Image 1 (tube, rainbow over the protein chains, first blue to last red):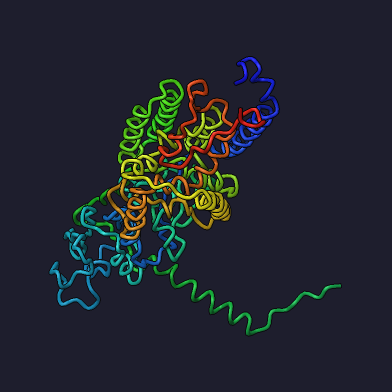
Image 2 (image 1 turned 135 degrees about the vertical axis):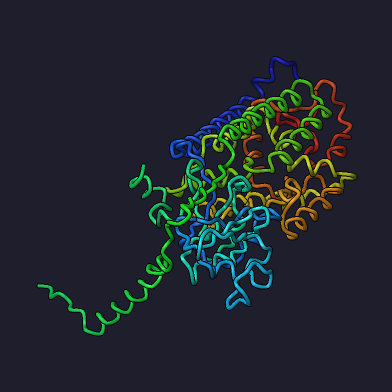
Length: 203
Length: 290
């Protein structure tokens, strides 16, 4: 066994290469992290659905990693026509214009229909029941004003690194929005969807 | 001189048809004019927009990672206590795994950093860059303490390990190349914006969230069954971040070593290591073994 003092002499080359490699890897890691930091800008992004691209395929209900999807239907009341015959609420050609289960399009009865004044009715989404299937959205978009639309509810969303629904979305409707402005308000129009153009226009 | 091309009449007809078709959805927005409720003066309900979790949660996440790494380094190099590291990894499993739900983890952060470098529209928060860089820095200094004590994916595999088999060396070496390929593919996919494959194939995130598709449970469950007799199969033969950490740990400044003065070359440790990480001793001087 060699005496402790002579260790350095034996290991010079090995230690030298080790140090060089350590330095190189350190510089590489710092470089990558630094370059990413320069781009960082500290703004967190969250997943959201662009309602103008959504085709209501129904995969939001099935593809979320949560059993109860984080995607829910929301109602932009400003756009709503308050129709008595709401095509987001009723089956096509319903038996009667009432809340009977056989008349309702929503498979889980998550839409509440409230009379406001003749001939207007208001439609509320119960998010605890809504599965995000988009049936009502399809009905409202096809024949109505399109005031019902799907959104990722940020209090439910786990903000997965790779959103499972985004990976499956056939319309490429999943976008990333800054966390301080995490929703698309549909009546503000298509320009409000894109953060860049919205910053130019509004903020 | 170039003559300007004239659009034929049928071309204009096509344009007119296209405009008519495009105009239909534009008109559709105004199918039923919203009422103004003159009788009842009804006011529209507000648009409810629950906000996402606050940003300080990410900062706590990164800070907890740093504390975990420091503790693991201290346990491994100073205390030299396997038990302390085991308890730390249980705590990490509970916090990073079951409490935080496994996102964002350093393994997946490779893709965020790659996407940030490749895609000008993609932004990555400073905390995610920290989560990416901290374990690498620690690996350069004190080895893969992230793997041993902090990573929840490693901890869940360690917990179910019952009777580790020793894999033949050739198989172990061959399978060790897989993480590098996986890393390359993941970087390629993230850089081209094709998706985050590491996250899509994250084996245990469904267990951490106690929620997920049958396929996710099947993939993770299969790996857990494998983990009962092969130590940490994901870490050793798949994990792309492990490949990066291994590269750094190879040249770490300080590392766990057997105590040379007390070692009697019994080579029992080779058999005891469940991960086949201890090889036959070599004489550091380079010459023949004394």
